[in-house]
Amino acid sequence: MDLGSALSIASSGLNGIEYQYSVVSQNVANSSTTGYASESASVTSAVAGNQGTGVRIGTTVVNVSPYLQSSLYTQNAKVSALTASSNSLAAVESVQGSTSADSGDTQTLSDELGNVQTALTSLTSTPQDSSAQTAVITAATSLTDTIQTLASTYTQQRQTAEDTIVSTVSTINQNLTQIGQLSKQIMALQATGADTSSLENSRLEVMNDLSSEVGVTFTETSKGDMIVTTEDGTKLPTRPDQIGLNDNTQTLPSNTWPLSATAGGTASTTITDSMYYKAGDTNSAIAGITVADGTTTTGTDITSHLTSGTLGANITLRDTTYPTMQAQLDSFSATLINRFSSAGMALFTNGTDVDSTGTAQTATPQSYDTTQTTPNGIVGLSSAISVSNSYSTTPSQLAPSGSTTTITNVLSTTFGTSTDDVSSTLEAPSSSLGPSGTLSTGYSGAQGLVALATSLTSNQGATISTATTNLTYATAVQTTLSAKVTNVSGVDVNSEMSKVVALQNAYTANAKIISSVQTMFTALLDAIN
Image 1 (cartoon, helix red, strand yellow):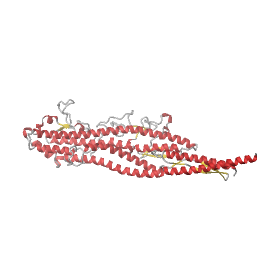
Image 2 (cartoon, helix red, strand yellow):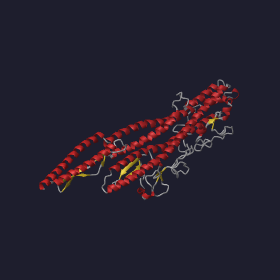
Image 3 (cartoon, helix red, strand yellow):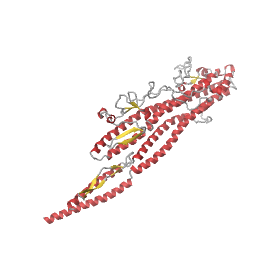
């Protein structure tokens, strides 16, 4: 091997070391970047004609375990979903009170109902005492206030879920189309054999963000493209060409493509009690989430396929959780009005006995249709229920001429638990509820009023508790998976610094060889001259 070869080999060594330095620098700089996977320099021995010619710089390797990464993405979606649910349901928990009927919390539905029962019991002893009469009206008003507060909370949280759905879809679109753009660049570079590690890492960071927004899976093609699907396999295009269209049909990245959460706009829908979402139902007033399919202008409704993640959780809150809670409360409100009226004391009404100015008027009869809005049905009744204007203005009607007959009847039948008191027309509606007619309370309607109130609060409390408990468990699993992923893909700064020391020594040695060769060349030239 001549001096020229030695100089060439040492020079290639310096180039290789510089390349490895750049990889180490990239790792250290991104050591705290979420979703970044450490990179490894690829340097191999170069050989030509059975002779070593130095080193060959290869393609930088991104250290990723596909299985662990996929598991973490799935867990990210679960944790995000449970976090969104738990945070939303906390608002209900704050106004719901204890699930115990004897909790002493006067804001608890069953306790409020118990206060009405107690006030009526006291009134039987002094039926003509105005303070005892007023106490009944006060307790009844407090009960309807509690019902309306719960109903208002459901509506507010459902609206928040709708608003979050629209904003999350926009973010998902940005991430999907950014993945598409990065993939296109990666494919172009891979076709020429160029290094794509930095682009791959950028794509990993976006994929990590997307995994928290909606449950998805990622599959990389042999050419470097990334195929994104929902957890059940529904494809989410990242570029128009993935669905047979020209990429020029969209300006990317985009927050309005490929998904759409609104019917021809970007603003969220103002949710009311009468509105619901149901795929294929022409009466559904809430728009489904559609995905561009390359064949239709409206796309394909994939709402039911978008599970887990922030998006999936809010879809469930908007379309199932809060409508069910509303249906439970509407059923209770209808039963409260019905059972009091049946006992001869129409203490509660649907709020139509006064106009918007508070002036008394003839009340519209309450229908107990389970799918129509009040007063034509019970949907939304819990937002309108109130104490009868005639009783609140003239409390003495509770015991006309000092008679306790009606009060006694209310205490024995309205608050009764025998079969006759809770069955037939007096049974609380428990199925075919809500404007879609698909909801149910989840518990029997053939219970006493206090038991119904307790069942409602317990059922909703269990929903809240389950979300909180599952979040704790899911977060623990996520932490464990994150640690495993970090062991494979994370940047160990101490290890990187050890590489720096080794590279410094190697650089010095290669430089020394080049210096020595140059000295030898000089000596040779001097000898010739």
